[in-house]
Length: 242
Image 1 (spheres, rainbow, N blue to C red):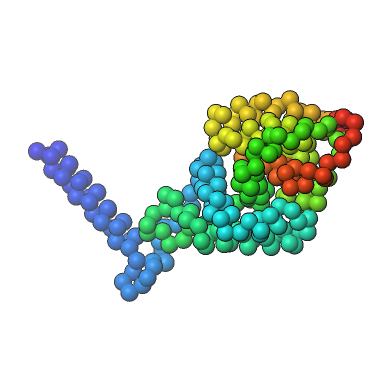
Image 2 (cartoon, rainbow, N blue to C red):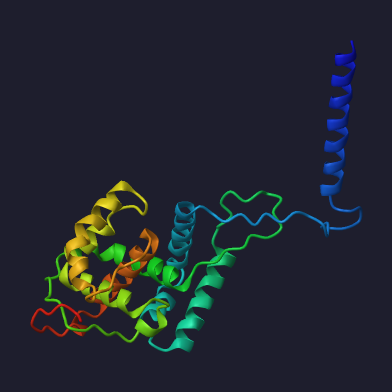
């Protein structure tokens, strides 16, 4: 009997605490929003974040291809930053990115690093021209690579050089990568197939340290650059960059 009484008392205490917690979580009477509401600041898992960002860019490019192209082609930092902020702001305000947010959420924050955002935009533009990219002739490795957008890409120069080099020396393999879904086993295979060409495109002594999302973004921008400005490549004897 004593154990049963103690069990009932425990249940009553839990119920009381639950009721108190619910009362504290509710907005104060007469107010629209409680000042002591709990903020959920969870970070998305990388794969889910990538998929959400991809959906955002699909929405964006249905609205402003011209602005997206400006973002990827300008070498002016002020213009690039302005394009980035403008495009991202429009996307956040007009594209559905709520995902698994609660219907009771007051605010939803979303941020995409500049280099990743540029890569996502580039990949979406490249996706419509994969056959043309794959059909481009492979070019010899150049001693150096330089493009006006390198300084505003928010990447290390050697990463941009490698990305442009790869699109020029192995356009077929690069196109194959963008026929895969991000974070799929097919993507892993495509990256592995690009390995030998990628190694030739890296400066001597440089080791690439990038996750799949960062690498894919860089290669997308390199591919986009090859498609819109194939004449930018000056063919010279094959020389490994040093």
